[in-house]
Length: 250
Image (spheres, rainbow, N blue to C red):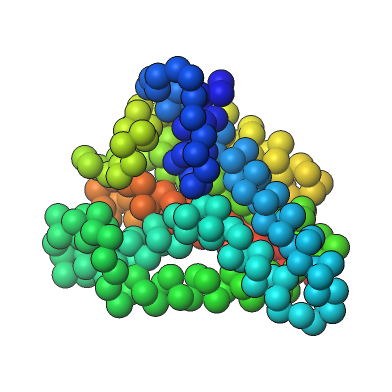
């Protein structure tokens, strides 16, 4: 189990989690089921950052705590969600020209175009605005649950849709291509447990993430001819934003 959790941590964060055993395809498949748990850990780190910052800057109108919370989340994850969304946006923009092969090549290219830059900027600004809007007394639960919902959305992309050839950019994650319904159900179960940290609202946030992400995943994977790691991480970012948006509703 630790080897699977270590792989999930390496895929989703910058944390140097090492396992004593070699990685197998079974470890990779189990790692997908643990994506929401890793998301909850990332959300807890962001929540701790907000807690400390809000004690240093106690003014409720201060923008420093949400700004530092945003930065902490981006640093721990290596901004994989934002980068994945930007890459997917560039690829979708290229698809308008009707060349799927070129679109896939652009998704794999680390250099960003106009669509990707706009998407990344808009995502960061929207996330910051949502962090400012969530009531402070519920920030920890909101961050934990939202991050778990987002990584559940990433797990959905890996388990429910076929991956295009070369769609996995992380060498350790190539075994994820063998995931399927069992891993989807396990990931959903873990996500439900994480969401239950905030009873009712947490579960409703998971539903909100699913309502947004699942149709988008169907459309985008059909457009690209399959899924990929940037697409999965990008949709995970959208899932997390959907949950955060839900938490801002009075």
